[in-house]
Length: 413
Image 1: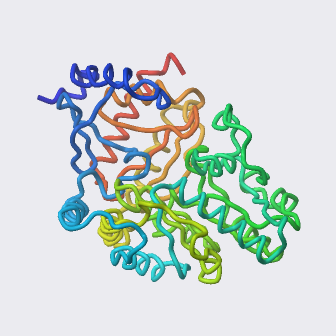
Image 2: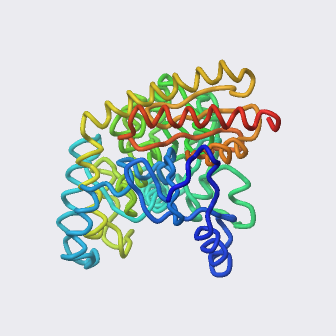
């Protein structure tokens, strides 16, 4: 039987047992974890002991259609019973269909599929460097990235992520990345040289703190790239697929990139990543230049086709914008109630950051005891990234839990 959130939810005996087993056999890179889930229903997760939680992080912006979405689940089950994998030695019709859907609804002409966001970024980096060496000269391989950005943990993506805490102990890193402050067009102008082949940037920075730059900045950045013959790459791993209230993040900022990376919500929990680009760029990736054993397999692309059909619906995007407005308005009310505790509310759609004056971790723990799961985006930022199908009553539940959590942690603030 599920406990009431009023009693303060704690991990039960089954979760604690799984935690002890995990510590014996798994790498410790994710840190200690004490909560194990075994079932999902829409915006809710049920743990191994039967406790029910409202999930306002969606597996870090992944299950944008909710947990165990019946449309996606059926598509996966049907395909798994038919054919899972053949490799890219052969044509995969669902892969072709997914590429048709993505290109028809975006700026892009062609797509490449992989298995994760980091893999997508690696592919985009290779594409940019090949374009640079082919069109500008053999030394034109430099890429400008934004401070506060996050692009993944594989070696190339890690090298493009300008944060020492992620990079420590993994050197030597891949050379050729130069950083500039997010939103500072003058700094980007200074960072771009004749050896620059691309700018790699997120439309809104997710892991870095849900940081927002102006539409003016992105328009000027597009112009700067054009003037200097530099590719503009948007990393939409976290912000794409409806998260900002538009199907793609670039539509939110009003600027088309040359290359775009996707993952996370693309498969609503089934691992898949993608690189989208204009046709003339894609043609540079000649046979044998890049590849992956599992990328674009039958199961992954079938899951993504089903997810795309729902994520691209006008009603889904409308709900994202509606509930995002309700969430931000509610957070502003809490900021008025807890003056000095909440410094800023920022974001778009249903990617919202709530910056605190103190550490976010105690507040998250207190909210979890109220039956609501939140995330962080840096030590002082609470991150909301719930299902795009979340209901108003669930938004209000999350706000009520945060209210109680802020009250409960007042002394530690």
